[in-house]
View 1 (cartoon, rainbow, N blue to C red):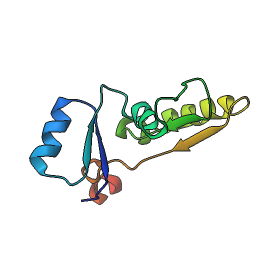
View 2 (tube, rainbow, N blue to C red):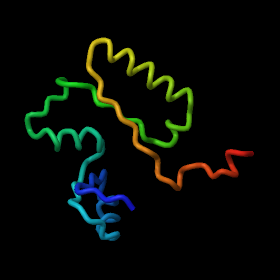
View 3 (cartoon, rainbow, N blue to C red):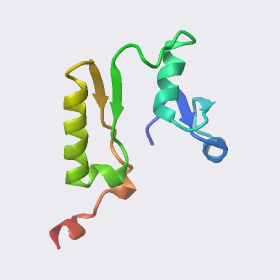
Length: 106
């Protein structure tokens, strides 16, 4: 299992799961949008939603494995990038969500 020093938990259930698993690291409970709240946590109280680069993340399995959704996201990022700087990243889905070699071959 990968280790992180800070664990952003989107709800009480996630906090409980991390505590039950005894995962090392500081658990930071959040109220929903983990990406936005992680950026706010990193930048502190002076964080202004309308300032700085646009942060884009694409990590949900249902989006990563759907070519039209990926293309739509890239098109949107290109339109945004005309006027704003964009910091984009994509995280890998959990390994249990990866298709097996057998399902790809069929």
